[in-house]
Amino acid sequence: MASAYLRWLHRDEQPERPLVLTPAQKRKNWWRYHKWQVALGAAALATAGSILWDASGIGKTSPDYQVAYVGANALPDDTVVELEQGFAALGEDLNGDGTVVVQFHQYTVANADASVSASAATALLGDILECESYFFLLEDPERFQADHHALCRLDGSLPPEGSRSAEGAFLAWEQCPALVDFELGMYTYQFIDRTVTGSSRELVSGLYLARRGFRTEKTAAYPEGCEALWDRLTEGALP
Image 1 (cartoon, helix red, strand yellow):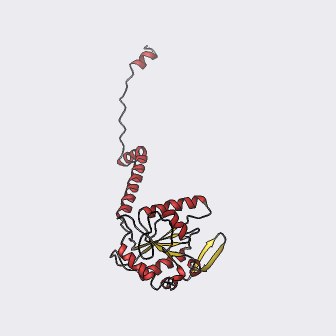
Image 2: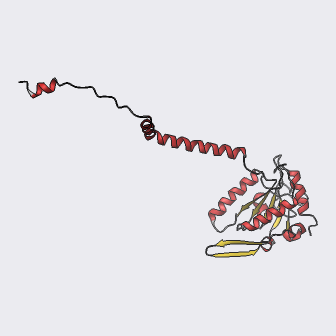
């Protein structure tokens, strides 16, 4: 009688039958090993698409005028909307898109929060270097001109190269009949657990209006149209 070892050695082995997967099982198996590659690829495509969308300007409205507010604290949203509408009411459709759009930028460079102030100062510097804003609403025009030397005089001329004085480069809000006539209404915002309301007119009455001066060929968009709006805003301004 053959030993157990010989029977094992000469056993009748059948080749393993290959596993046949259904199409659904194949898809499931593929997804199991490739899902992260697909997710990363989709994220990369979404990021690239977003960048291209922003660069092309699709879906965005290009502003006809840009205004920079520079102060210690941001103005309420309600006040900003009213200011934009006030400027727009005296403006023109400079880019031909069928509407007058005013874009308002806020730079709280003197904010008590040092990080907020630093971030605003950096953004303001970018605005000045890129010649974005033509109009400026300032809490402290003397300090602004000393820091940035960016304003021109009321007649459009530039101060001497070495001068940092803002003399003759700004008008108080209350000096300009056109600004005084803005229908600014009331502002409302939520502060912690209470609602704060007030007069937007009173809030901006202590500001000063100035405009950008350009020392190189680079200027703000639509400089002629901006100058025309400046003339309307300052018409009849009291000395």
